[in-house]
Structures are given as C-alpha cells and as structure tokens.
Length: 257
Image (cartoon, rainbow, N blue to C red; front, side):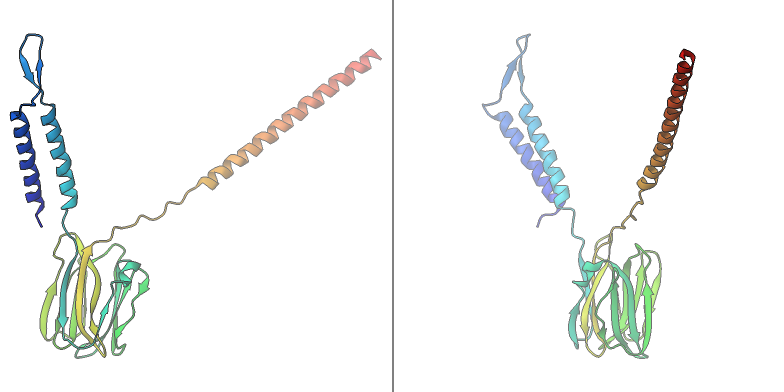
C-alpha cells in the first residue's frame, strides 16, 4: 500500500503529464485578441490543477492513518481464551477489579461504561479496584509474568498510576503504536488464574457534553401569568366603562321624567 506522500506525488506527476500533453497537442485552442495577437486558452490547465487539489483533499482524508494496535500476548499458554471485544461496545474503560495473592494475579474484571465484564480467573484473595475519572484513559501498561500474570501497572493520561499484584518475574511494557490512542479493551487466557493478557489500543473516546436543561416552561409560565393579569385588568376596565355608561343613562331618564 502506498503512503500518503507517495500517493500525492503520483497524483501531482499525473496532472503535470496531462497538462504537458494537452499544451503540446494540436487541439490547443487559441483566441484572437483585438490587437491581432493570439492568446492560448489555459482553461484546461486550470481544470487539471483543480482536479489535483480535489484529489489531494481525498488523499489526506483516505490516508489519515490507522489508529488500532495490539500489544501481547504476555504470560503463559494455559487457560481458556477470553476477549472483551463485545464488552467495549458498552463504553470506554471506567474501572478495573483484580484478585491477587502473594504469588500471582488470580482474577480480573473490567467495567466498560457502566457495565462490568464477566470475571475471568477465580475470585479469591485480596480484592483491589481502580476507578477512572470521567474522560480519563489508560495510555501505558507494564507488568511482570511467568507462567501466569503476576503484576499489572496502569498509567492514565491524567498521570495517575494503579498497580496490582506482586512484583516478580519477567517484565513487559506496552503502549499504543499511534498517537492519540488509548487502551480500548483486554483479551487473554484464564482458568484458575489470569494466565496471559493482551492489550488493544484505539482512538480515545470523545467526551460527551451534558444535556442542556431548557427553561421554556418557566418562561411560558411567567408569560401566561402576565397574560392573566393583563386580561383581568382589561375586564375590570371594561366593567367600569359599562357601569359608568349605565349610570349616565339612568341620570338622563330621571331628568326627562
């Protein structure tokens, strides 16, 4: 697959070649000016360059580059494979729960959004949990392992560090291959312990703005109260006019009598 720079260079050379062929061809149009001199029509050249700019924009959007990468598998070959590829649809990683003892990591569970994944391994030993802040993501993972996972350390983009398990065995470290990515979900193998672990990196989730509370009802309520006040004042004024007119008519009848 060509890189974006190679693709843009190929498009540029193609446009230049087509422009030269068109200029040298016998179909080049000439226009006669008022002073009798001929003038070449460069409208086709402009068309080629506009085509090049359009292809350039498409090349930038198409060849933006991948964001997914994978680190692992770290640990042994025992246990049953597991993957949180379906759990990640519930949202980003928001919490991690582990069960450890003095030798290895016994159990492992992750919360995606508000939903916890199914625990892997066994739920025995010391229980520790780590909760991420809203919008916080894991950008670096390290640990130790032998035939099982012994220790895991997570570092977030808010410079917080969470470590679980005893620190002995072979060490590893993992981080996303592409910039702007974060830990998306886990996979690995587990049975009576966490045998191995794999780390899947992808784009950081975009923060969602809280819903805006509308105050239309309050505004409508105040306007309706004002309308009621105005209508009552108008009715009182009309009633006063009617009473005054009735008093005038009665006085005129008395005078005529």
